[in-house]
Image (tube, rainbow, N blue to C red):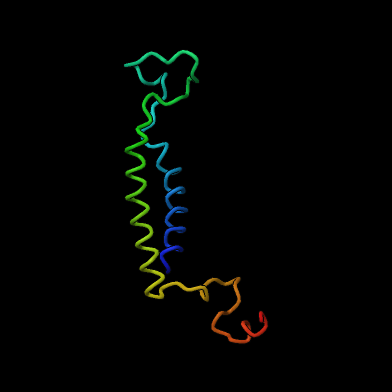
Length: 99
């Protein structure tokens, strides 16, 4: 995996993990009894979203996922030939047809 493809895959993984992490521990303004809701905001708006902490968690989880993915790809545990609906990449006639 080249460095550019690793960065691209990491960014995709990071955004996917971010959207999974965002709802963790969110309490809306109505559930949070310590504060009054901010006038003019939605009742379901988070009282304290902890975005910086969630970005740090997202970065750590994404790094673990990318390292696992890199290990699987570099060790050859899963290759493109394992995906059933793709053509057989070991067959050289496929590449002759594409040229």
